[in-house]
Amino acid sequence: MSESLFGIHGMALELRSQRMGVIASNIANAGTPGYKARDFDFAKALQARTLGMDAGEAEKAATLYRVPVMPSLDGNTVEMSTEQAAFGENAVGYQATLTFIRGRVETVTRALRGE
Amino acid sequence: MSMGQPLTLFGLAGRSMSAQLVRMNAAASNLSNAGSIAASEAEAYRPIRAVFAEQLDRTSGLATVQVAAVVREQAAPIKQHDPDHPLADEEGNVWASPVDENAEMVEMLEASRQYQNLVEAVSTVRQLMLDTMRNR
Image (tube, rainbow over all chains, first blue to last red; front, side):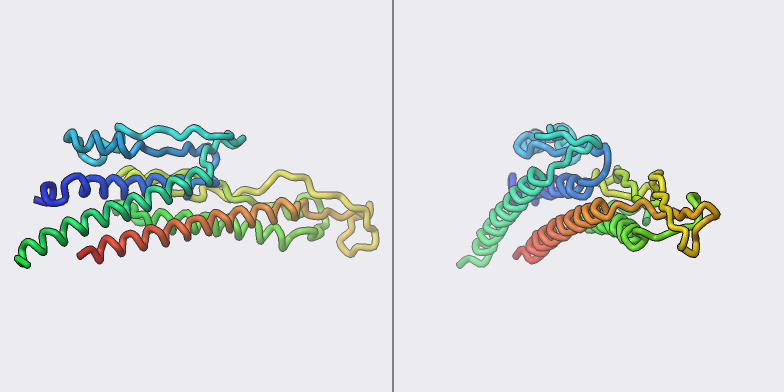
């Protein structure tokens, strides 16, 4: 039911939320020696999700380690600027998807009311 | 630490914020012991340092931080010749703690920056979740 009501936006919101966790993990581990920053390609994950994978599998299929611009001596590959940009971009994407869902719900509500 | 419960984004940020606090406390302890004098080399204060390790929560795929250990640095105390000091040994030497104030200040600054980054991330996440809840 919710699949057909929200279409691709339901899956997108789920993946956006997962990506938020991945990037927050990177931010949290900015000072951990040897930590390798990860991220996943949202478009790739969404495509995998639409082809029938569940959200966890789709995330795993599209996850890669981040290539640092300047590797640090302790083996940590988190770069704050990159992570903050990615986090911001993802938050905007989440917000946009939420707006689409809200629009969809409003449309259906209006149709049900018969206005 | 509550086992079994999957980690949420808020739990993740909370844990890594407390790890940063441990780090900041270690730096504060070092700063307050900067230049303290001891009677022998063995008694002299040595700087402490928090060692971070990644803690992966397999159920949620989130990685938070834990303090794996708080270790003492192996820096050698500084020998000072000060025969008038009440703690001086028979050769007239005392040992000062080998704390590098500048390094400790940098450590504190870095810890507070990372703490702030986490606060920022949490407030964004909180706002987005509230927006999702209020979805009408």
